[in-house]
Amino acid sequence: MSLIKRTELPAQLKQLEQTAIDGECIQIYLFFGERFLCREAADSLEEHLLSGSGGVVNTIDGDTEDSSKTLGQLMNFSLLPGTQIFRVTDSRLFHSKVVAATIWKKVIQAHDAKKDTACCKHLLSFLSIAGLGADDQLHEISASQWDKLFAFAKPTESLEWTTDLLKNISLPKNKSNTADIAGRYVEAFKKGVPPNNILLLTAEAVDKRKQLFTYIKKKVWLLTVPCRY
Figure 1 (cartoon, rainbow, N blue to C red):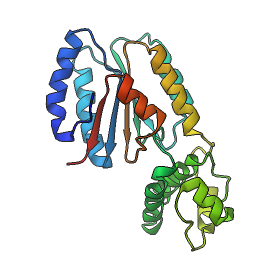
Figure 2: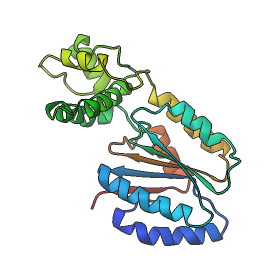
Figure 3: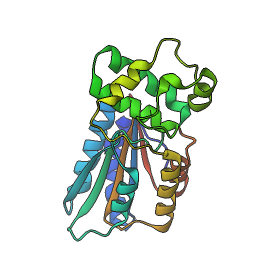
Figure 4: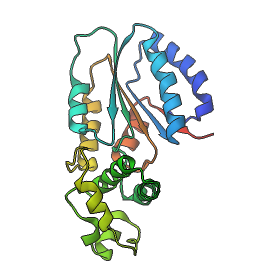
């Protein structure tokens, strides 16, 4: 399915009703773009998916998510009736150094606004692009290595504040490799997930070259909505 605009979503939801009647099941959705608009679109889809037989929504924060755990839950057959939606907000599965500069801007914006929790979340997302964690110190990374890891020039100002900030957070600090886990999601959908399970992803920044993005766009009947007017 090609990309659709947010304003086209109501008509697309009606088409989904016919899809269900025909026995086809769409099990993965991606909303990307402005965060608030993505949330609105995802709310509409969630309401639509639960309007028939009901079900359960498992809400997951992508900034602190263990993607391996989510995948395991997605592959399990539930004893509960109805649709099982796994809704991941701010998914990191489509992150790469292509979007690193965009995420870094969010780090700086949150830092300047003294929003420490938001800043920490963005920092962890930024670090995860390079397979780093909260114990890795950004200020010790050389300019050449920074450019290799994140594909933009290292800021000239001191970054020791990032280390100090991350020392005091209570968020999960595990390192993650989004490339590896995204590949596992691809394999899972190739094999097939339980019929009542649905993965609903939202993300502000996505690298459209990522393996998972290209796979679900080509191989799976996917509703992908750029959440911009």
